[in-house]
Length: 317
Image (tube, rainbow, N blue to C red):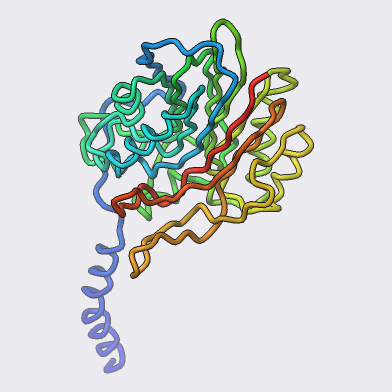
């Protein structure tokens, strides 16, 4: 009886502590918009005013912009890239629309309007961690360009991780799954290339990402149009998906470049440091003239994102 009383006493002493720890680790209160996000919708904008015709050069920049949290410096980086004397295409991932963490702005639309670009944006996830329930917060992929974009479509990937069920414990509960966004690039009256902005699953293994890459290649099919795939692949060099890239007739734009591109931070000395190489550009049917990994930090020392932009330039046929 004495032992039982002691046991009850211990439970009474520790129960408040356990409950306090549980309360701190439980997901934050979620504000889910009453306006559901349509996972199949595409937002299309045409802000480019000056026709670009008869150019024989194409620059492609793939950039995970970490939701667009550092909007001003991202905008400035894109503006600098547009000084290129040819067609420019931006393949962006983690691009927010109406989410509280990025000021409820439509990042892709605002970039396109400010810079005078055409744009298409598609939903990857409807986010449950949005703190402004009057707007349906979502994140996705975008393609922006100074030339027309046509025939935009979404390739929805097989789910490799249950973001809705498991994500709630890290305040990342979401509806949807990984996707790739495809569009045709038009110069004059000609489709000069198809481009793919992709974001493969981080919470899976190489086989899971290889399956998602196969889905992209299958969706493209035997398209005779030159094709470029770019984005955050969440895969390091020599991962399983590189076999599928080669089998699909694609080339790696960075075969000998080992500059790291992901998990970027600012070190104590103020310099950027990235931990892994997971952002790539693959191409077929084009002659590449240059590829580069840019700094994730702008000239004033602000980290634009936790990823670096990667870019490649091509000669159009």
